[in-house]
Image (cartoon, rainbow, N blue to C red; front, top):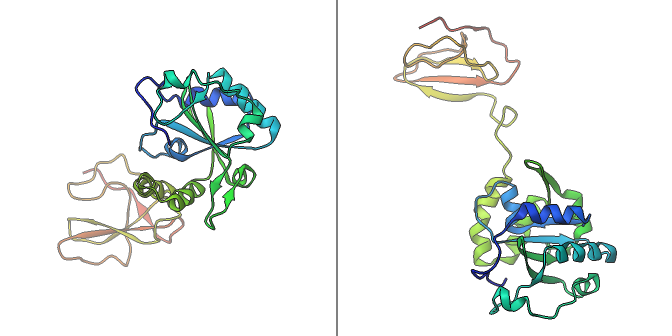
Length: 250
């Protein structure tokens, strides 16, 4: 991927998405821009897009790129030099290249024909869109390829920057921890020396707990037993057979 020189415009993903959407381009964000939409912190200088290769869609894409004053991004050339290249930007030109790299007034743009799948084959837009995600922000929406498809493509590319990005992407792909994923009985250790059971869904009480005791409602269970030096609070799933009482004021 060609490097971005100091004279190039700054990356403005929101503007790029707005122009693509105004021209009704069928596309999916992939790569670093999509990863940031999923929550990754790794910075990126351009946007990678997989577009539908239908000629009418490529014509719409060319119109959006012309609105953004797109010019080729060529290694070894500055942005000002690339502006002087005679390029006829239309759907026919875009259809002739599997990958093309551009600079626009909204930053870098790479137009891709697909992503590499787990078996090494190229997955086009039509295959990726079935698993795609719409990520909504303040006044805009981003259509991104599925995070697992992005991870698979980076694993197959196996470039140094891909290997650096993969740990964070795999973390973003992990499901959030909520009441459905927490084990039925989870022990949280405290320092008062007794074992108590508490329902996970019970909200914390407005009463203050005594120093060293957990806040919220306590459940007196027959399973409570002395623990030397520490206290464990076992958090049970909703609907557990227990009787909860409000903690008295401390």
